[in-house]
Length: 141
Image (cartoon, rainbow, N blue to C red):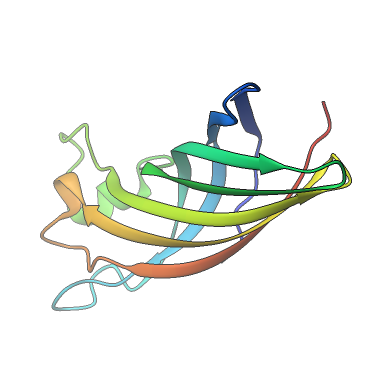
């Protein structure tokens, strides 16, 4: 699946550590744990919060990052289908880690691994997913 949206990077230059977060639109296919009740795609906001360590060179930089993330369902479609409209927290939480390269000051490419850890009110309906991902970023500011 493809995710897109704005990302923010904050770095402490002297010690090359920082924080990076995003709010990305992410369609996600959910599989029901038993009866395929959720065997379709739903839209989520993916919000990772990663702590990052960076080693920079004039034209090329390397970094590693890790932290938690949350997937927040957009709208009530998923809650209506599960009859959990009264539940406020249909989030999916997890952990991710990534390693990446920054180049030409505005570009960043990373390879990461994401592990769903907890599915809040969806736990009984949702089969947790682990996934490898490749991300590409272009800095506009």
